[in-house]
Image 1 (cartoon, rainbow, N blue to C red):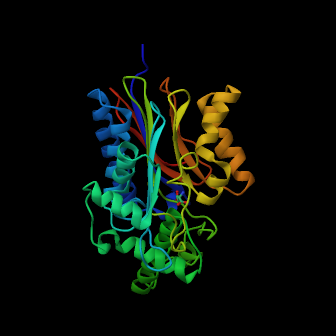
Image 2 (image 1 turned 30 degrees about the vertical axis):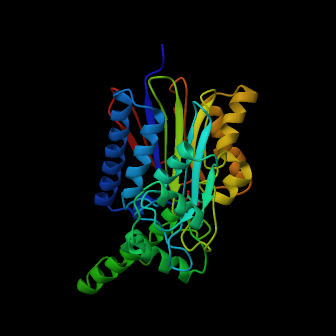
Amino acid sequence: MNASPVIAIHGGAGTILRTAMAAETEAQYLAALSGILAAGQQILADGGSALDAVTEAVRLLEDCPFFNAGHGSVFTAAGTHELDASIMDGRTLEAGAVCCVKRVRNPVLAARRVLEHSEHVLFTGEGAEAFAAAQGLEFVELGYFHTDARHRQWLLARGAQRAMLDHDGATLAAGVDKALDKAADRAADKSADQTAAGDGGLPHEPIDPNRKHGTVGAVALDAHGHLAAATSTGGVTNKQPGRVGDSPLIGAGCYADDATCAVSTTGSGEMFMRMVAAYDVAAQMRYGGATLADAAANVVMERLPRIDGRGGLIAVDARGNVTLPFNTEGMYRGYARVGDAPVVAIYR
Ligand code: ASP
């Protein structure tokens, strides 16, 4: 008998600090993750394919402004948006991906069309947009990808003169907001407890500007025993125009093979590329006989840190095992088995 269908998603890893997150914001993130998991879960419960479930979950994550993909993507150093996405079907090993697209509303749908309707695997820039247009996909005005929160993050990253992973930039922005709020409170109430603000109002662990991540992804096992994975991102805040990370690269940011596992990653893309991180999980299972959990933990907790790779991944195997390891302070994540309530989490 097949294992019960399951879907897992992530909304990026990074310096996500409880101290820098308002309770209301945290609740909104958790609700968004649960709702998106429920949508993917429904597809699987109806007998839909893992490929359809991950496509829909990532499409919803792209449309949600909280996450760095689609609407809500980070800004490049030129103040523009360049989006990347990939998808892989573990049943057939077919794959599709796009990178550096600027006006395609849902890059994961473009990746899916590449998988289904092209002899190629990866399209970039104008060629990717021409392919998406020929496929009849929705295009948006450049302003669609602008969100005030990401714009603020970009201004901070630009001020620091570096590229910055999405959630690290968000934490930095939240810290600045909190500092401003506290300063306003103190001005309003001269009797405020100055010792409580002895840190200047910034979170106790201000972000290290070398740490920076965001991206979305989904992996699933369907009722027929098939696996699929999809990943989508705006990349890193203040990245050089034309920079491409691991997310649209099959093997680095996304991989699926029914014989082993389905994987979607998030983190410092350059290191995930150098480790061929997603495929390495599958390779350790295939050639080394490792379990899903051991292979994923080895990649995230041992191999990536050796080259300063920060981030995490989500993975599922054909037996329905799920693992969600990360080596950062937090990762927006969750999974849902058909018949059970979604499980969501942010911090370690
Ligand atoms: N891996 C993504 C990239 O390098 C960023 C991230 O996951 O935060 O583009």
